[in-house]
Amino acid sequence: MANTNVRLSLALDACSLTIPQPDSLIVNANDTADYSKLGNASCIQWFKPTCDRLIEIGFKTFQDFSSVNNFALVEITRSKPQSLGLIAQAFDTLSKNSILMIDGNKTDGIESHLKTLRKLFNIEGVISKAHGKIFWIKKSTRPQILDQWLKGLEPTKIDHNYSTKAGIFSANHIDKASALLLENLPNHLSGNGADLGAGWGYLSSELLRSNDKIKSICLIEADWNALECAKLNINDKRAEFEWADATQYKKTKYDFIVMNPPFHLTRKAEPDIGKSFIKQANELLLPKGQLWMVANRQLAYETTLDSYFTTVNSITETPQFKVINASRPKKQIFR
Ligand SMILES: C[S@@+](CC[C@H](N)C(=O)[O-])C[C@H]1O[C@@H](n2cnc3c(N)ncnc32)[C@H](O)[C@@H]1O
Image (cartoon, rainbow, N blue to C red; front, side, top):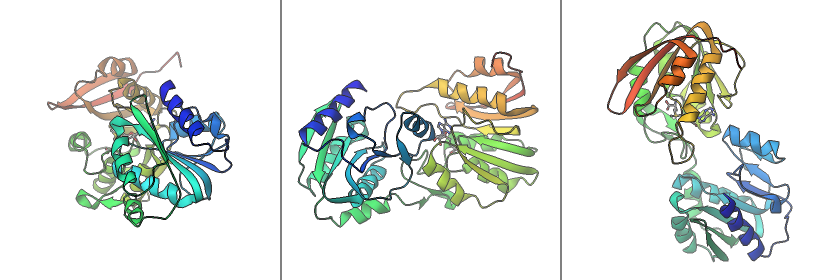
């Protein structure tokens, strides 16, 4: 991260802006980046844990674009249509002649964005550093293709008429692991449940459709955009939607929890996130509550499951995934 901070710092120096620029915007702001040169910029961020940390360090955060800005920095995402849509949105909020900077890693496609924008705008400067690039343009005539890029941010329909958006988990299809979990869920689930890391709502939607013994399901999801899609996908009074960090959520206790926990936030596997979800399931379940989860087969969650639940059963395994049922949450003394 240190070198990517140098990349931004060099770019800000090179484009001779008066820094800090009033009314600056950072799109997909990163909580580990150093934006101190940008003063009290407004940050657009949809991932709740990142948003919470940005607020902690003093930034105002938003999920939608609104005001007019005099400077914008777009940190690209891993999704090409989402990044292009965000570039178009940022462009549209800028006042004339303002600078729009676009920053990102090679692995996230920054070079392809530079190539695309070069065909449409005069690129004012480029800095390559730390396996990535930052480049900037000045707000000028608006190319019509930006309308198409904006469309890339709108919800689209996938299998079974589900709505998803670019950039969210499993945006193009139903996730295979979640489908396997659903196939293996018992039909006697009842009472109040939670769906941890609910995504665009596949598991909850199917459960509510097929099971009238369920009184409620709380969809707890950190990605604002995914949760917005879940709201489009589920029209059932028993569904509740919480934009929250599931590992910190503590409002109530549940009879059952279903989850296909995230196993990475970056590109490499990070089993600790799944372990935090298991620990949280232990805390959120009633004494007779049941956890039903699916995970990639190579992720070693068994020791964690055994330390938080008295009974742990493997329900099925495929070459890729495993479905696990855990019950009788152990009382945690050292919390
Ligand atoms: C493997 S996906 C499963 C999504 C959904 N359950 C499905 O079946 O399609 C994991 C989900 O957890 C979300 N997530 C990641 N970290 C989270 C956190 N700390 N709190 C809540 N949700 C989180 C991700 O945004 C993603 O939607």
